[in-house]
Length: 248
Image 1 (cartoon, rainbow, N blue to C red):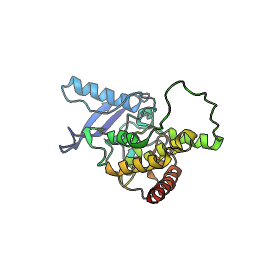
Image 2: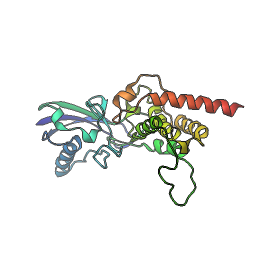
Image 3: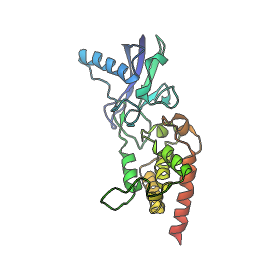
């Protein structure tokens, strides 16, 4: 199939970018990233600069890949990362527009690659638990309610790709942060640091320049792991409790 690609090209965060148009021959069995590999090989053979895009596992579990395809983070399929998006969902002759995540907290490094180290700093602020070193405890030594375990597992499925930020009209990171807060809070090991964790992570989120949540629900709709906004409500309750405790 022959496709027309309109791809955002930008050397770095300080330079202006623009869309460039390319033609590519793709096979319907290719993944979206394999199609970009074909394009880049053509560009290299012509002596042109290949399109920079981020990827690693190409199995939808690492969270590295991510850009906007035809106006939707990760593309047109629900619950799918861009590396799992296949060309069979496109038609011969289609024009496909590809651009990076758009957020002040995600400055462009080059082309489709953005700096998501703000997520790392949020995790460093509180996305962990303190445990004694030594021999690992038995997995069944601390009982966990089945419902809590299921909710914690669902929240822990977040891969930190940033699609929620790209989808949100305010570029909010609330879904990401709430997923990380929830999966630790719901387990007994994470309850000790609950109040300081949520306060520190929300504070860092604000420092990074992410916007506020306005309940648009676009984050949940575009999340490749379908993380629920129920986590945001849970985090808000934890944050309120933390604020009240700190004021005493």
